[in-house]
Image 1 (cartoon, rainbow, N blue to C red):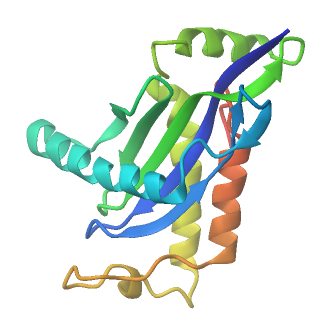
Image 2 (image 1 turned 90 degrees about the horizontal axis):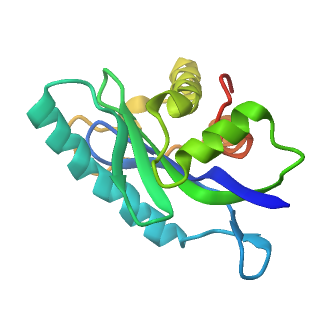
Length: 187
């Protein structure tokens, strides 16, 4: 018996001036071909990440609180979750609710209960907290690099900016995206 559990389809970092800093995409299980393939193109994920900027702005305007949690459900399969740091950098995680195929015998009981609770109901904020904590830690490590120049990525005038090209940061994002499953408490 096989079952599908949520997996990360895309991780994104958006700068404080609404400029994209980083995007990593991950393959999802395609039930039709029984293979792993991205559920959307990189351009579609880029547009999806850009659409979350508006949701962050609306929530900040109406709630006057730091934004975290479900931003919006894209369709019956994808949902965008986000976290805004105190410096205005936004971390976005797009979750594919049926993205990872797992044999029933491999599922741990915590994963199984999380998988069942997420069928149609979405994920709880606590299930994605380790993802955002790991993403924020990777970003902080990047900022601690003496050769990294954050002003190149978020210019004071708010125009343009370059993407993060650090290999260690990209590797950290890849590790986070590939290792997360519902029920994981630390990444």
